[in-house]
Structures are given as C-alpha cells and as structure tokens.
Amino acid sequence: MQTREKKGLKIKGKVVMKQPMKELTSLKTGGLADFFVTPEDIDDLKTVLDFCTQEKISPLVIGNGSKLLIRDEGLKVVVIKLGEEFKKIKNEDEELTVGAGANLFNLIDFTAKKGLSGLESLIGIPGTLGGAVVRNASAFGESLSQKIIWAKVLDRNNSGFTLSRKDMDFGYRNSIFLKNKDLVLVEVKLSLSSDSKEKITSRLKEVNRKKIQTQPLSFPSAGCIFKNPSFYSAGYLIQSAGCLGMRVGDAQISFQHGNFIINRGDARTKDIIQLMEKIRKKVKEKFNILLEPEVEII
Image (cartoon, rainbow, N blue to C red; front, side, top):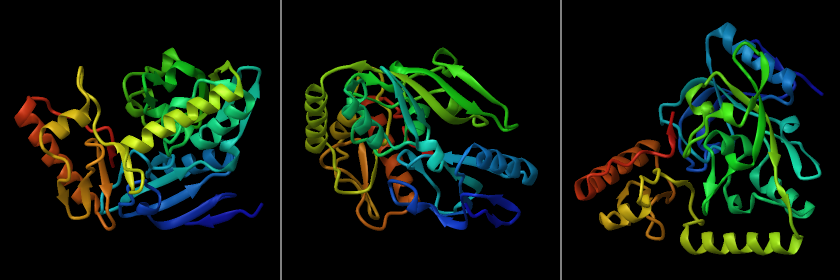
C-alpha cells in the first residue's frame, strides 16, 4: 500500500490538509480542519498520535460526526477518522469483537444475519460503533453499554490497554471517553443473545417504522440536540414552549420532532448555536428547566 506524507506525517492512510468539516458531520456545517487523517491500521494510528505529540497539536477522533457541531472558524487540530482495519467484525458464538470504526448499520446488519439480538433499537443511528460507545447511545429504553464486555484503547503515549465495562464509567449519554480525551477507542467486545432471524428482522422493521413516523429523516440533523432531563422528554418541553418551526437562517426546529434541529440547506454552525440558545431560554422561562446539549460543540 502506498504511504502518503504531508507536513511530516507519513502513513499508509489518507492525509488531507484544510478539510471542510461540513463534509464529515451529519449537520453539514463547520469550517476547515488543519489536518484530516484516516489511519489504516494500529501502526498508522500510533504514528498519527506521535505526530500530534511532537507538533503539540490536539487530536480529535471522530466517527460519522453525528453528534458534533464544529464551529465555522474551523479547527487547529488533527481530525482522525479510523480506516478499514478498524471496521472489522468477528463473532464467536454470541460474542462479537468489533473495530471502533465499524458503521452501526453494517454491524446491525451483520448481527441480524447471524441471528444475534441486542442492537435492534440502535438501527437508524448514522454513527460508528466507537461514537455510539463514547456517548452511550440508547433508544427505546436500551443502551449500548449493557452489551459491552470490554474495550481496547490507546492513550496519548501510545500505550494500549483494556477497559472493562465498569472502567468505562457509563452514564446517560456519557462515558469515560468524554471525560478523558487522551483515550482513543480502538476495539470493542460485545455480548449479544441468539434469536431467530425472523424475529430480529421484525423488530428492526418496527424500530424503523417508529423513527420514520417521528423523526425528520429527509434533512441533515444531529438527532436529538438536547439531553432529556429527569422525568421529561426534551422534545415535549420544546414543543410545549412553542418552539416548533423556530428558525435562524437555514437552521430550524423540526415540526415533526421538537428535539431535532434540521439544516434546510445552508445553515451555519453559528445559526444552530443561536437557535439552541433561543430554545434553552424559552424552555427555562416556561418550565424553569435548563436543557443540556447532547451534541458536542467543538
């Protein structure tokens, strides 16, 4: 495989300078990143992390960018998106070893064909397994963390080690990876359960049906934009506060789901942030509840 080198960074994978981040996020907004790299394997990844340390540049590991809001001014960082070697899926009986770069859709399709159940509620989430683990993705009362046995990680010194599920400190839309940005998730071990392919396919169709009915899937979005506070749905609070359809530029609160901000064409990150602040203000005034963003503003 050909090795590529730019600005002293030599890896087998892709290296791009001045990468438009709107091409890498589900909201389709964001300025330029100084570096964008796709390490093909663990050696590439270690080379990239060494480069970041030597050049004193922060790394930012992303999946499919479905929970990231990148500012319009861009990023003075090295954006890392894991390459092909990190997308592999292997199973032994009811346990799977999966690379952090694997797309959730491909993973769920793999498990359905193998007659393995436990991930059906996550169908339709446009992310990678790594991103889903980092934010402890959940839907319809089931969270991904319940299926995790361990995860392999690298730290900024390129030391590799394994974390148990308990070590990962999972919470609602939270994990150790959001608290400790020096950890890079590489591989995950999952425990699922056997079931008939017909039942799994039926559940997948039902979850898809519910999402099509309740979510604005025809426009770019980041999924739910705010976390649900205790005892309330953020979508209910936003709708009850009269926010449906509110708009700043091409950023709009969906009429279909109050907790979705959609990009109607040419929204900028600043439009979305301004709209989020308007939502928080109206909900605080009506319910005395301050909504907490579920998206990460970089």
